[in-house]
Amino acid sequence: MTWTVIGTYATAICLLIGSAFVMVGTIGLVKLKDSMTRLHAPTKVGTVGVGAVLAASIIHNFTFGYGSYHEVLIMAFLFVTAPVSANFIAKVNIHERECDTPPKPTVDEHWATLKPNGIEKMPDQPAQPSNGG
Amino acid sequence: MIDLFNLPVGDGPGATFLAWSVAISFAVVVISQILAMVRVAVGPGSGDRILALDTMVVNAIALIVLLGISQGTSIYFEASLIIAMLGFVSTVALARFILRGDIIE
Image (cartoon, rainbow over all chains, first blue to last red; front, side, top):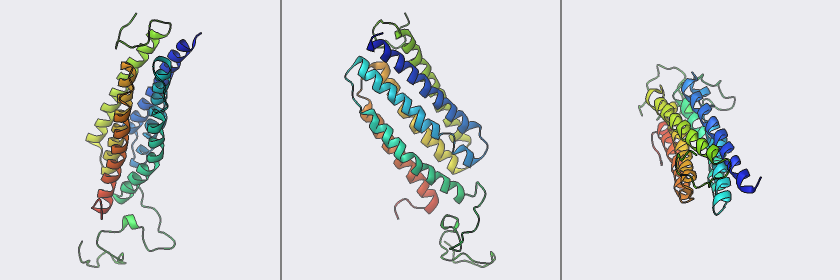
């Protein structure tokens, strides 16, 4: 076993693991039946799936060409930005009321993301006319 | 010996396995891209569509990296890095537009 053979097999196994996780995450994105549960599945694509493919690229470059760790940059960027975008999409789901509305906050009167546009204070009676937004 | 993508992996043991792995990974990621596109089309809410677009960006990064592996070059690294950045920015911009009605207030 030379390093070339080990690198070849490691690249192939990393590719297979990564593509399996990509497939699992996307099937979950299509088949799950709730918006918030659908948010859970594609995180596998963003972390393990692409991470394994990038690791395969690193190993391939070290085995057959000029090796470098450049792909770690993409991996780190994806790992850092995935929670932020997931938080934004979850806020969109709450805003569009595609999930259960969260319980009333203890300190404030209402959640900011559930507040209608253009209203400073949430009216107590829904029949209260607003100034429009 | 299979010559799927003319892989620059030599003729040693495992070259056929690597060629098949690259081909299978291409097929799987392309199918995943199509499934994510289905979710973009049928997704009942805007959150689902944003999520599916984010998944499609990540799948596009995987496709570009696979193309770089199959051609034996590393010149696609910058392209995938820029696509990762643009994907995050576009996701945040779409979500903010739906949340606030404006992107930069």
